[in-house]
Amino acid sequence: MKICIITMISDNYGNRLQNYALQEVLKDLGHVVETIHNPWRKKYNISLEKWKFIIKKIIFYITKRPKRFKRKLNFEKFNDENICFSRYWINKKRDRIKANKFYDLFVCGSDQIWNSEAEKIDGKYFADFADRKKRVSYAASFGIEYVVDERKKEFKKYLSEMEKISVREQTGSEVVEALINQRPECHIDPTLLLSKNKWDFIADKFKKPCEKYLFCYFLGKPTDHILNILNEYKKKNEKVNILSIWDRDDGTHNNVGPGEFLGLIKNAELILTDSFHGTVFSIIYHKPFYTFSRTGVKESMDTRVVSLLKLLELTDRFEPENITLDGVEQIDFGKSKIILDREKKRAIEYIEGISK
View 1: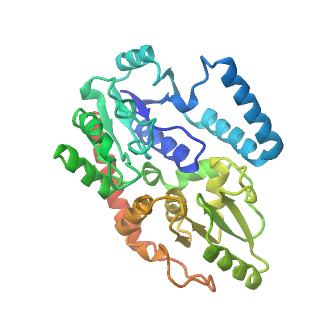
View 2: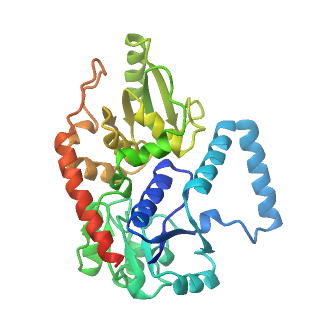
View 3: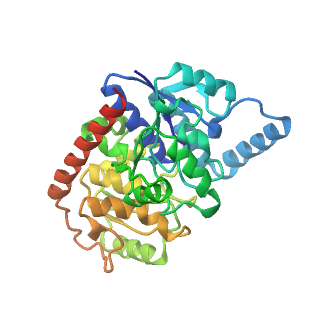
């Protein structure tokens, strides 16, 4: 079967790695799998003014934010080496017509492709251009716990016209049920479907840091509480470095691509993060971790990580009240592994069912 994945494409570690994971799961089942180009990657029909803006932006990043520019190049390299892209572009009507004829199935997901607060999310992310029997989703996320009022009618139409729906969070299942009176299945993020050994194929391409280190990955601004914890940790653990990727230009590894990001988690002594996928890969690699609420976003954005930690019975790793990092305890992943194996089996059965 020729299968097309519809997802967002951005310079975000979780976004690229979930795309890769779903691609590999489908390929392992014997399918030909491609990801359709989307508007965020459009490279044609650009006006002169737009080109001027792009050139100015490139110069700005090269001169003022070289780490960000290097990171962009590393993401492009990852895409070129690991993602099989379609010849078609989702935002060109002619291409959508051709894609519908070419592919046997369109899988929407994973990631926040159904976030109603994102203006760019429209019917294309529900495969509304394809024959109804070809429209399915896997672990699609709404990102938040609701659909904004002004888009409920629109989303109701998109969802009701899908052949099969799978969402990532329990709250997403409740959103769908409220809109179309149909409760879809919840499935784990595709990154959790690949084994640690499979991820090693990506992570081990990069040199392992020689020294022991704590790894911080924050998409929001680290709070004073977190920074105080890190300062205390530095004083008491002089031989353990602190490596970081965060939304500030002084992160030690802000320039790395998805593969090296995986390696940083795999080889860390401890991970502190506010990221869903930072949490996911800590679990995959059985690493001690703490997950914090992300600053600068709505509280409901934490739904994704809280839902996962509840499922795997690891809620004590989220927003701990008293954390000193003194003699960090190892996590017993035995119970969560049993749950995860069960969820993997259920997810693969669903994917096999939609791709017969």
